[in-house]
Amino acid sequence: MADVELRHLTALAAVADEGSFGRAAARLGYTQSTVSQQIAALEKAVGGAVFDRPGGPKPVRITPLGALVLAHGRDLLVRAQAMTAALDRFKAGDGRVDIGTFQSVSNVIMPLVVRRLRDEHPGCDIRLFEEETDRPHVGELDLMFFDGRVDGDVEHLKLLDDPYLLVARRGTFPDGPVDPARLDAAPMVAHPPICDQARLEQTLAHRGVRPRIVFRTAGNETVLSMVRAGMGVAVLPRLALHGADIGTDELLCVHELRPALPPREIFLLWQAGRTHSPLAARAIEIAVDVTTKIAESPPGAAERPPDWERVRR
Image (cartoon, rainbow, N blue to C red):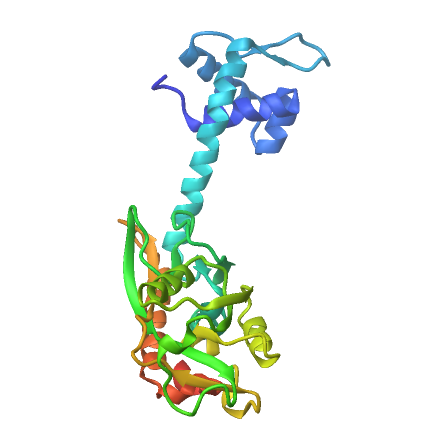
């Protein structure tokens, strides 16, 4: 089997698919004699015929031995193609980068990262995959933004502490900070209990604070709309409020929580031991720069649309 080569398996698959050596040669861009030589070399390596050749216009038929070799050979060809694609992506600075993200990162951080990557590499292929999950799959991606650490063979780069803030209808609480204890039994609109939302609710419970969840939704804007409607209050990470323009909203008010709750931590993840392509390495640098500027913005900035030009520079 050491003598079996990928070119032999490519010829085997082409002949099996096309039903003739001539059509297989045309598909591969070879001469028919070249395909015949590849099949002959394969048959010598595996110790038997892989096709029955009836002659004339009748299609060739794969033998049981050939079917066995083809079943395993297709797997090897798929893996070889994946390897070739991975090598191409790594070598091309204007190649492809696959990035996992989630809602508030998609809304605030990713537009700035994408804009700068495209400014620097106009031909780059950026593919984003958004998912709200507590079980992220890092292996298929170059990079992934996530609000927590992940067990397993994954490397973590912490980007940002994202503090929690209280959003309520104006007049629900006096101006200024609010003690989280006041949220006990209070009606609350919240995200689904996955990712950092579950940790937030556990933290409140450990402090003896158990809000009454009246509605759950994954959409940040929907949370704010329900607070406006009077369904209840909401505790949201600061990043989720960027761009919401709450400072000019006549119905909503943002309060700091004192004593503060542990902030949501936002990380950039990738498979341990991975050598980044030039494009992925640059995406990491830009993400660090963008999140550093966001972290340095004043506390009230969460109530206003972000200063995009400042964060972009």
